Length: 358
Ligand code: PLP
Image (tube, rainbow, N blue to C red; front, side, top):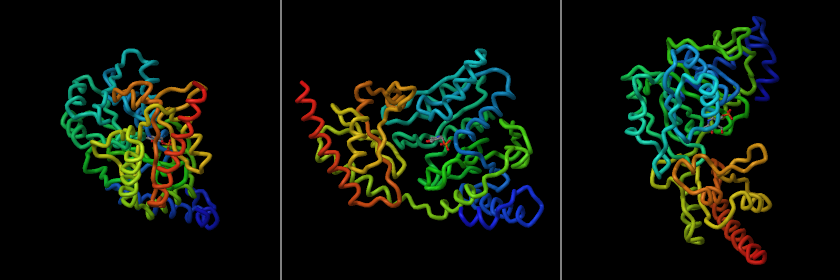
C-alpha cells in the first residue's frame, strides 16, 4: 500500500506516467482478484466495501424490474437486509420474503425453493453467515435461479479466502466481497458482475470502473486488497478453533457451540454461555487483552439480541449470552487455550459478582 501510494501517486484515469503507474496497479490487482474468485477481470468492479457492493447490485435489479417478490434469508448481514427493507418500505407494491434457517443456522434448499415463485425478481443469499460461520446452500439455490432466470446476489464477504469459491461456475449475476475480512484494508471491496449485466450506478459521476462505479479508485487500498489475497491461509485456523471449542466445552460443560452440526467457515466460533451476559463477558475479556464480539449488536444505545440467533429459534436470553470468536492466520494454540482460561476466570468472577448482588 505504501509503495502504491508513493510510486504511483497519479489518478488511474490520467494519461501521464503517474496515472499510468496507478492504472497498472489497479489492473494487476483486478486480474489477481478475478483469477482468485474464478471469473474474468471484466467482472470485477471495485467499491468502498461489501455494503456498497450489495447496495449497487440491489439497486440495479430492483429499479429495473416490475414490482414483485424479493427472496432473502432472515440471517443476512444488515448490509443486505437494510437496503432490501428500505426499498420495500419505500415501494409497498414489492414483497420481501425472509426465509428462516433451521436450527443449524443454514437455510435449506427446499425452504428457499418454496419461497421462490414466478413473481420473484431477486434472490439474495449470503455464502457464509458472519456470526455463526454457517455456509448456506448457494450452489443449489443458484441452480434454481439459473433455471428460472432470476437474478441472484451472493454476499460472499465472509466466504472469501475461507473456502474456495468460483463466481463463474455458479452462473449468478452478482457476488460481493470485502478486503478487511481477509486482513486487507478497510474501505475497499468488490462487486462481481456477470458479463452482459448492466449496472445502475449509485453514484453517477466520472464514469470510472468502465462506467459502473464512478469515483476515483482508491489505489493504495486496492493494492492492499490484492496483497492480502497473496497471504491468505485460513485453513490453519480450523484446528485452533476446534481446540478452543473442545477445551471450552470440557471446562464449562454448559457451553453450546452454535452451528457445529453444519459446515462452517474455519475461523469462526459462536458460543453460548448460559447464565452469562455476552457484552459483560466481552468487556472482561477486553481487559484481559482479547478482542472478541458479543452476538448482540449495539444500535442507537439499545442492545438488541442477534437477529441471526433469534431467527435460528434461540431465546432472547440465550441470544444475549453469546460470544463470537474469530481466529486469524496468526492465532496460535496458546492463544486459544489462553482464551479458554480467561473465559473460565471471567465466568467465576461474574458468578461471584452475581452471588454478591443476590
Ligand atoms: N456482508 C457481510 C456478510 C459482512 O460480514 C460484512 C461486514 O462485516 C459486510 C457485508 C459489509 O462489508 P463492509 O464492511 O466492507 O461494507
